[in-house]
Image (cartoon, rainbow, N blue to C red; front, side):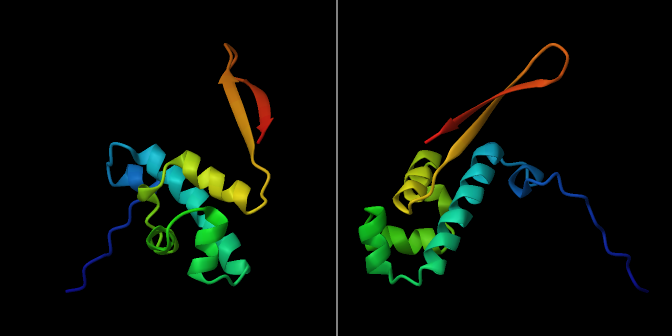
Length: 108
């Protein structure tokens, strides 16, 4: 007897789907962290070079490159992007009474 596979549609945030309390924070860290790793891999840097650029000890570089983003705050990950010469733009949205968004952009 063959059993039908069970599929559940994702919300787009795996941490939320798992029921984790800090799901939004973990998801944000993951998205930022992945961008940091992509930039570092594009540069083909050794861990000691990454350590110097990001201003963190080599063991923390290892954690970062292994995707252990929970070890870094969102702010720290954004600092890494700035140290990699990236311009960061935050889009702030406030919902008004007509369910439309008023948006402000801040460039860091």
